[in-house]
Image (cartoon, rainbow over the protein chains, first blue to last red):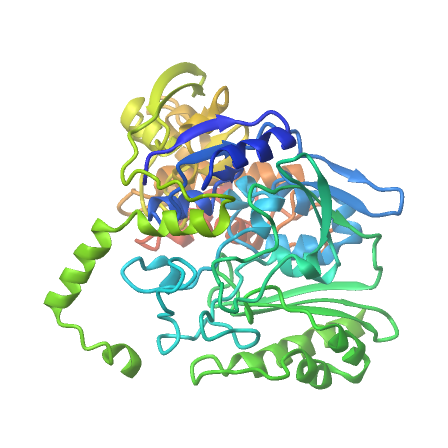
Amino acid sequence: MKAFTYEKARTPADAAAAAERHPGSRFIAGGTNLLDLMKLEIEAPPHLIDVNGLKLDRIEPLDNGGLRVGALVRNTDLAADPRVRRDYGVLARALLAGASAQLRNKATTAGNLLQRTRCPYFYDTNLPCNKRVPGSGCSAIGGYTRNHAIVGQSEACIATHPSDMAVAMQLLDAGVETVRANGSTRVIPIADFYRLPGNTPHIENTLQSGELITSVVLPRPLGGAHFYRKVRDRASYAFALVSVAAVVQRDGSGRVALGGVAHKPWRVPAADAAMPRGAGATVDTLLAGAKTTSENAYKVPLVRRTLEAVLVDAKKG
Amino acid sequence: MDDLSDMKLSRRDLLISGAAAATSAAIPGAALAQAQGAGAAAPQPVNPPPTMAKTTLRVNGQRRELTLDTRTSLLDALREHIKLSGTKKGCDQGQCGACTVIVNGRRINSCLSLAIMHDGDEITTIEGLGTPDKLHPMQAAFVKHDGYQCGYCTPGQICSAVATLDEIRQGIPSHVSADLNVKPLLSVDEIRERMSGNICRCGAYSNILDAITEVGGIKA
C-alpha cells in the first residue's frame, strides 16, 4: 500500500472541499472495497478523507411516504430497519444476499453504490485493463469471460457491476443526494447515476470530482410482492452470476432489474411493460441485443428461468 | 484457454514485464487521479513518505495508545503493535474471516479496516472473550465438539459465532429468513448462512455448527 495522509471530515461540505484541496484523494467510510484495492495499489490515493463522523447514519421518513437513507447507514442496519423490511423488501433481500455479515456490518449505503468491479483482470496488476490503466487494453476480451457482461459492454470493457443493493435501488428509482465542493447540492436519479463503459470504463458514474453522496432517497413504497433472486456458485457469500430484482403487483404488472449482466444494474423501462406477458417477453426486451461469448451465453437462459421462478412465486402470493 | 495461450509469453518475458509493472506501480493511481480529479495534474511522488498518526483503542477493556503508520490495519495493530496474536491473518482481503473481531458490539473483518479509524472504539478479540482458566461458553463448546483441525480460523470462527447468536437475538434478518417481518429463528440454517463469512480450510464445519448450536440452545 502507498503511504497516505489522513483527515476526519466534520461536515459533508467540509469533506467535499477537502477532496478538492487534495487531488486524487478518496473518501473512506466502511473501506471494505477501497482498502482491498489500496493493498493491491490499484487505488493509491495520496490522501484519505474519513467521512464516518458526518452523522449521515440515520433513516428518516419523508412527507411523501418515502425514506431518506443516510450515506453512512450500514448495510446490516438498512436491511434490518422495520420500514425497509416491510415496504422495500426487495432492498432488504438484496442487501442480505450480498457479502458476509462482517462486511455488511461495515459497508455503507453510499460505499455499496460505488463498489468497483470484481473482474479478475481489473485485480491482476500484471495485465492490461482499461478500467485500471486507461488506454492499456482489456484482458477480459478474449480471456475467461464466464462472469462478464452480456449487455451494454464496449470494445474497451466487459466488466460487470458487483453490487446487489444497487440493483434494488435501480428497481426502486432511488435518488442519490450529493454535495459538491462549492457547497451546492443535487439529486441524481439512479437511472442517470451509472455509466456504461464506452471508451472510458474508468469513469463509472456521473459524480463530479470531490462530489460526496450524502443520502439515498427511496420514493414512496410500491406495494406488491418483492423479490431478489440471486444465482451464484455458492449458496452464500459469492457474487452473482445473475440476479433478478422484481416487484410484482396482483394484476401481473411490475418492475424488473438485473444484476451480473452489465457494467451497471440493468433496467429497461420497456421490459417492465412486458411483464404481464411473462418472463420470455420480458427477458427478450431486457436482453435485446445481448452479445455473449461461449462462456457466458448461459446467462441469457439463466435470467429467463430466474425471472420465471420469481413470477411463479409471485402467483403463489 | 486458447485465447490466453495466444499471448505466447515465455517465462522470462513474464518476469521482465512483471518487473516493469513493479517499477511503474504508481502509474495507475496517478492516471486515475488525472482522470477523476479536478486539475489533478500535480504528479504524486512515487513513494510518499509514511505518515504517522496517534490513535487510542480500547482492546478487551484496556486502553491502548498507539502511534501508527496511517496504513496500519486494525489487524496489524492488534497483532504487531499490541502483541495480541490470537486474531489471525488469513487472506488479508476480507474473504476468509480469520481476522474477525468484535468492534462496538459488531463483528468485522479487522484486515479491511484502518486502525486510525477506530479511535475510541471498544474492540473484543479472542483473548477478551475468555482465558484458558475461564473459557467463554463458545470456546468451551468448540473444544468439546472438536470445532477445528489446524485451529488457524478458530479465533475468527469463535468471535463470529458469538456475534451470530447476538444478531439473531437482536432480530437482524438474514438471507435465509423466510419472513422479513418476524424475528429470525434460532435455527441451524440461520447459523450456517450467518457463518458463511468464516472459511475453514480443514472443513470442520459440521463440528463448528454443533458447537454453536449447543451454545445457542437449539435442539439438533
